[in-house]
Image (cartoon, rainbow, N blue to C red; front, side, top):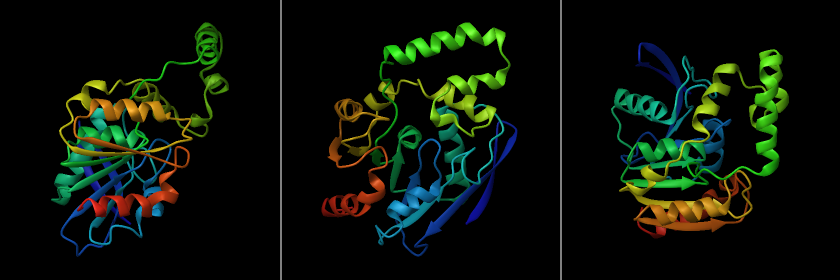
Length: 239
């Protein structure tokens, strides 16, 4: 594991990363999803794509990377871009899972691999809308710590800054970005994914002109067991 300091908007971010197969000339950048770290991407793909250099990165606020302000996805992408420039590398392929898929899209790579990517805003159920309404009604009367009673399991153990970041990025509609995406895009999705439903993957595939959609068995983290399948398909296509 290595660390690199990046200055963004006057703040110094310490970013934790790891490189595998350093001797290989082509590079794949792997970006994890919300609440995760580079380790899950390494677990899924560390033994695949031996002909590529692997670059695994903890996004700011996750794993061993620092965060200093409330960011949106565009700011995350800019930090990652500064990180790549500091390392003097330009990835040939960028993989992005869930939230990392949005960051990967904004990096505008030539080849993009989306794994159950976020970016499609799914209408909230009546139960969730009622919970939000109750929270807003009660918020003025209770200490700030009581927000966790209403929050989803996704925010358990999360500090206040990361919770504010989550609130900022969770409802970003990436339709315009997918529509203007020029990358050759391969979209893999878990058929039983309940975090980002299969219909979201189908919509993204309809928005990105040069895309191919591959539903696979599994949930939101289907790729952990499907790394070899994803490698096989991409290698058969000449990557």
